[in-house]
Image 1 (cartoon, each protein chain N blue to C red):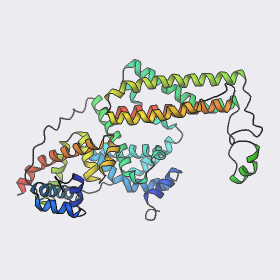
Image 2 (image 1 turned 30 degrees about the vertical axis):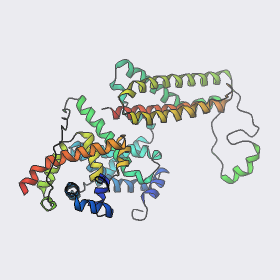
Image 3 (image 1 turned 135 degrees about the vertical axis):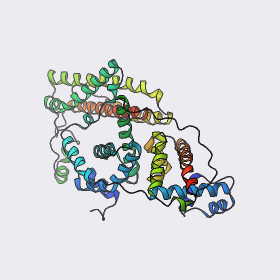
Image 4 (image 1 turned 60 degrees about the vertical axis):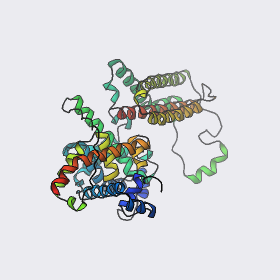
Length: 239
Length: 189
């Protein structure tokens, strides 16, 4: 062995699981032997600590989970962006409101566009009807007809999503320079993947294809969720 | 269920909405999370509240946890975020002072006698005081390693740090901890 063992090797040795090579080194190296004694002392010190009682905490967790079951999950987390400047906070909160508002109105949009999904039949029934059309398509292969009202609702929803994405992207851009480079890289990759999925959902979509348009909205919703998570995590990483 | 199922089974069940499975996860993991938050917050009521908040968030985000073996680190990562939110709120409210920098660590050139550390209330108090002398991030990383037995890679994920930074921070935290414990050891000698 050249040089001293890595800290992980010394820790393993202190726990009685080290390699023979490490043991040989420690036997002949006062510095490493001292380090091992310290590691043992730390382990002993922490091991004697008592476990806290948590039995009384479960009821509160259970109640809060039950209470949150009827509230959209994204609304449960406190929006940190309110701490920023008034203009930015207003814009980002507005973007979030648009996002959640559009998302909450999804059922209404589905109703208008006739794209509400029926409850899937049992697997056996799916097999029997498989030749009638591709999954998610009506048996006759036609997409639902869209009138002007439905098209307008979809256009508005997509514009709102796009606007929300722009606001959140600007917020992330303002946070990014303060991040650890490795963390920023990781979150850039997350957003790149989400953008790729959104781009895929938008490929060759006819404006009057209701199901395809809904898939685009779903793509935006997913992208916005990723942006929201990245922003929240960025703020938490830059105290 | 508690004895029969491992974390992977429990997580799979909890992800499908099995409340009993999540309850078992809570009772297995909550003591560690509560102790971690107690060490960071130094406030029992806040640590209890933080533990509950951690598990409520974990329940919401269960579907994002892909590796059952990473459960403890994942929960401590959530707890750390809960801690920082609590800290920011306190600072906004003007009730907390920013922690002092750890400062340069002294070189500790004497090894302790483990026997002298076995182990009294005095040692426990000393340890708590020594932990409090660390900055929050270093304390969190050190606790994840020594008190919760996470690997350095798991800590890197939970803290959002590169692996080398995890090793550096834990090394510095250890030096500071030893510096704080040294007078106690000398007093016992």
